[in-house]
Amino acid sequence: MLKPKLAMAAALATTTILAGLGTAAEAQQPRRSQAVTERSRPAFDAQGVRLGSFLLLPQVSLSAEYDDNIFATQNDTESDTIFILRPEARLRSDWGRHALGLRAGGAFGRFLDNDSEDFDDYYALADGRLDITTGTAASARLGYQHLHEDRGAPNEAGGAEPTEYDQTTAGLTLSRDVARLVARVSADWRNFDFEDVAAVGGGVIDQDTRDRDEYGLTARLGYATSPNFTAFVQGGYNWRRYEQSGARDSDGYAITGGVALDLGGITTAEAFAGYRKQTYDDPTLSGNGGLTFGATVNWNPTPLTSVEFGIVNRVEETTVAGSSGFTDTEFRVSVDHELLRNLILGGYASYATNDYEDIDREEDLYSAGLGVKYLFNRTFNVDVGYGFSSRVSNVPGRDFERNSIFLRVTAAL
Image (cartoon, rainbow, N blue to C red; front, side, top):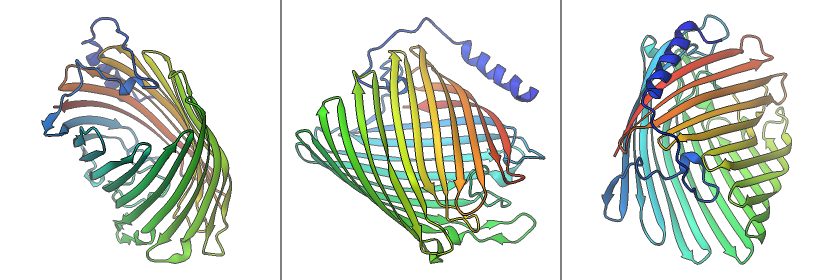
């Protein structure tokens, strides 16, 4: 149940938004399978700044968020208000062939009472596509992010401050469509560099043992029996290499098959299932293998409503002693509805389970939220929302519940 202070703040923020509502919703004809949140709204979309054959889209948002359990603890919970500044700039090409995009920004958070939780996140990402011939293209991506771990994260160190880390990524994909055959080959690399964090009560928690490189190769071959149905097989191999110690180094593979559907543009879906295996260099860590599966479904039951379902199953790294890793299985659904041309309602719910190998540890994660977005004009919009998250663990002391509300104002050119 929401605390009285939290409930009053949510009611006040919602009243502020609803006070500016106008006339009834007007339906717009979306593109095939296009979600409500992706739809073009010419009267309210930011125009950007034209730079030759590029379009620059800058924006900045400022939000205030109330969180009733900032440390994600089971007992002695601490509440606080967080102010977050999020500047961002996107640059994208407007060419007849090929494409190039750049994106940079950050999230800078300041807590009202607990300045030890302040954070400065920032990122720079780039992607491009080279159209080689008709049906053949190569795409590349490169990125750098400086981030922090949320207090409720599975591997959060529990230090006096949040754990900060750098993540560098790079990838290359080659795709080829020949008649009804669709082929794609991808290579990806991720580097994680964690910073040491001060321990509660003094000392330092060494995080260098988590530094690692992850490499992946994936190949996919599909056959389209019709424009709306494609069956495919996919194989992938990965290497995970730690910089300080090779004890947790591992190799893994996955072989899956699936289908991609387009049912009249109203519903699009992709689902797959197969077998995966992750093997570790340390003989005391057992391999993690078994069924793997996943799916995404996008459904537009009306021109004003879009629903998205998602399922994901993956093997994640862990710092828990004696465990090789954990299997993360997540189910998620979200709904967006265009009540007015400039008023969008949204909600989501998810359930995930983290099952650790080699040890008796299992955690169930729940989350849900509601939000309202109001577009004043091309320049300004405002969001208000509520979120809930919880963890239920068979390890004593790891359960928690969190409630939060936020109000965010965004300005864009």
